[in-house]
Length: 265
Image (cartoon, rainbow, N blue to C red; front, side, top):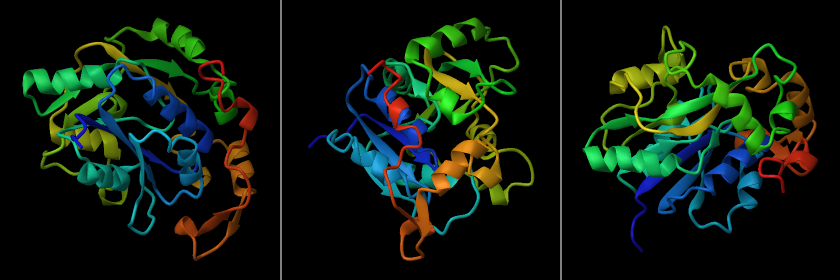
């Protein structure tokens, strides 16, 4: 079997409803010669979400083998890069949505220019400090509604339209590794990684929707809003023999009636 031409990496921790939508967007890529790693960072929900998609042989499930420490995906990204079967790496965060051209654009940037890294443009949906700043509201948006909200932010000179790992691609054989948050004295893992890689500009087309919301860095609620976190935890019971220290006792989705709203299914 031939190797895929590009590897898409998604790390996830306690966001099953958002993860499902991200995977759905990846499946709509026009560039089909890829593999997609879903990497659980000690998440008791991730494998159950993966099971809904394992019919698609391009999608593969991995577990972060290291003991859990607070991080923003660095360990899982390093795991995915090491496991990748292709020359090129692209990313999909578990709360972002890809446009169908995402992997084609990234493959073109890396293969046509013989470069180490590339960075496409992203649309932004800004939900911080709004009534929509919750998982329930985010997953209620259809793909078209996200597009409609984001097109008004396409000012590339806007300081908020920053570099983002969700738009990053690079060669697998880079010598730079993702730094762990616990090792840093300042900055976030993604910005430090991109700085060390030398990423300093964007080019090409718009390839994804970045959803900006306040749940991202809330350490005490595992990167979600409080309502969502509380419902998630009620789906679990402590079990030290299980990966991540929890056992799922019911279906993984907090809002199952909204799980297929992205494309109107």
